[in-house]
Image (cartoon, rainbow, N blue to C red; front, side, top):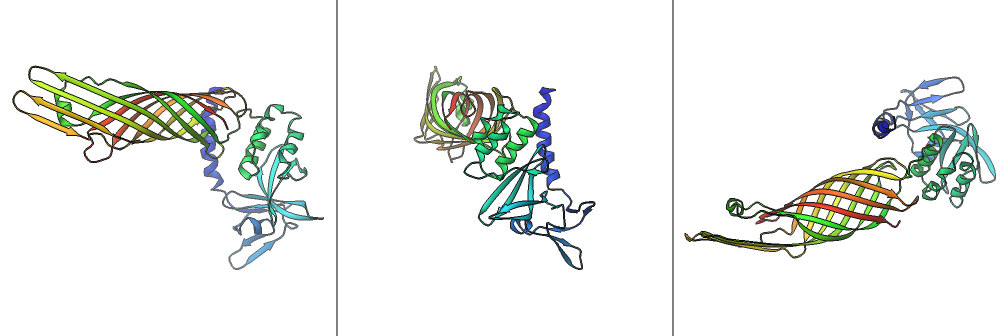
Length: 366
């Protein structure tokens, strides 16, 4: 059953988005749940009052009159009494997460405010200066494994909602957060000539040439899920020299590439605690700082070809691959990544495309 978890996570992720935006608006009293066209007035006004459009007129409901209400965009509000300054007031709190512990949001005049409730009882407000300490005070009791995750929780809706959900479900998978790091590795690149003379000659067997690569990466989680946008920027240099002399033909080909490559990938990482396999797919751009290349082709019957600047400055293509993330601690990881890419020149006169295989080792320092 554990093997099905990544698939079910993805399905719930997609269907959750669909149904959240397909919710029917409603109001709820102590005894009734009624589907009605509730008007979305913006987060600040939604916290003060609820307006229902009955067609011929609009009716206002206060937090004292309703137990809660919901909007068509998926937002739910509940009536709760909170402390505002030196007094207590009943307001509509936006319900961000429900379970053993529930998370609520209130857009006050002095900024965003968050509240956690155990059952129907509100725990003291989560304050921006002390919210991590407050989360630790009660979450250590029966789920101390999540203590490190609290250090990654930000004071915003999405991050706090993610943590409360993980706590309610006792989900011990790593907490998603943006990663920035460095990478080194080896790149194997091969020429793919597209010029008719080179192809027709059939004189060369093009091999992969090895080069050292060094660069940096950013891995940014999408909606705090196991999906992420992965951007790299790395440098590599390759040189090729081929020559062939026969009784009837004489051919020489030299190509040099000094590339800054920028893959932008869509990554899915399996939600395991320590060893985390991942897959990548996306696009790649390469800029050649100093493209140099030429070929000469002569035959005994007088046919001659001389071409220079046969390689483009700009190449675009695709990348696919996968790898393994090994978590050293809650924040730092090592990444082993294998990838295959195809690059296609975009400049006029380009005669060379490339295939490349990359094996890299990365480390995120934040």
